[in-house]
Image 1: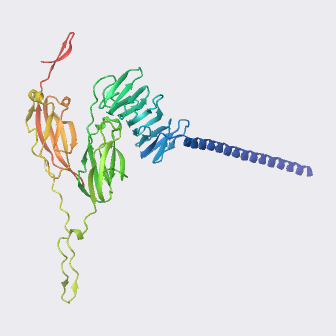
Image 2 (image 1 turned 180 degrees about the horizontal axis):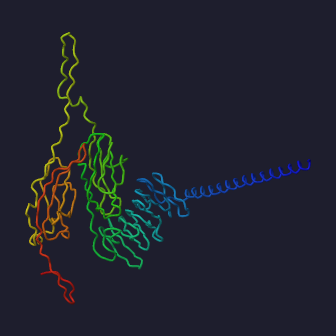
Length: 477
């Protein structure tokens, strides 16, 4: 019996020793992990602090949502604060619907980065010029006094001092447009071509402009025109305010994104609203009372800059006292000799604006015929109408009459009482209808007036095709 007890004690000691050994192993493992983490932290801290010994080459400012920076000798991305220094070799990237601005100290070069853009900051060997390597996305870049270089893949674009460019890089390739000054493009094969303001190069599906290797200037973009709210419009607090604009390159540009800014000053400092809009209209609500300024700019730059600022006012709804036109009625004396309370004062609601009338004086008039004689004197059709009182803008539409109804050819919202149409490639022989109606933006939202329309006929002879041996294809009668 005693022997069994001793055996059980020996077994218990062995189990206890095994548990102690396991506990010691776990403790040593945890201490080793902590030591490894402390070592990594020291290495990371040393690398971060070592950047303090290098002089920054500029600063990056976060304009909207998310932007990150990564040093060339690190794998992790750091989220940027409002303004952060940048160094040679740093990578900068922006997220979805995000924007950032990079200012380089050398020569004062400035770069505006669009969404989902990645760049690397460098310097040209020998010249020391600022070098921006665009890996993807879009940017607008203005070179400083020493010029600059933009690189994408095997394409190197050298900007003259003070030159500016808008560029995009993606699956379709590299495309750019010179916004100011001049630049020289060196391609993969060593071919060099010079471009001036208004010219560009790249695949058409990546960026509007001339094809690579072709001469001529890229088609300039239409300037951004603010439509609603009209200059000086007044709104009531708590209601919705609709914003509309036109121009800016249409939706042919990457993403069709625009930046809307609303501030209490025309310089847009400390903007109360800073947002990106896909398209050309947006509705805001809950604007505070006061006078506000707004403007729109394209996210991807190009030949179209930010629009001039327009102003509107938000006021509190009129109080009952403010709407009283007459003094309160005196207290009435009852038969018992007591004074009855005066009748409540009546308030008058602000008069409703008159309805928008259909525009009159349509030009060209109904029944107009566009023939060869008109084409020889003018390469455009000038549509016009009389201004409508209270209108802030107009909606113009052009239709082709078909056997089954109407087919839309062109539609635009414009601020004035006229529209010039010069896209004759959209016309064909037959009957057309054009319509116009007035638009107004007020405290109750947007209002559309009645439509006025007019018809005209395109009587352009159809040219016959002639295939001549040795001369190719000719068109004529």
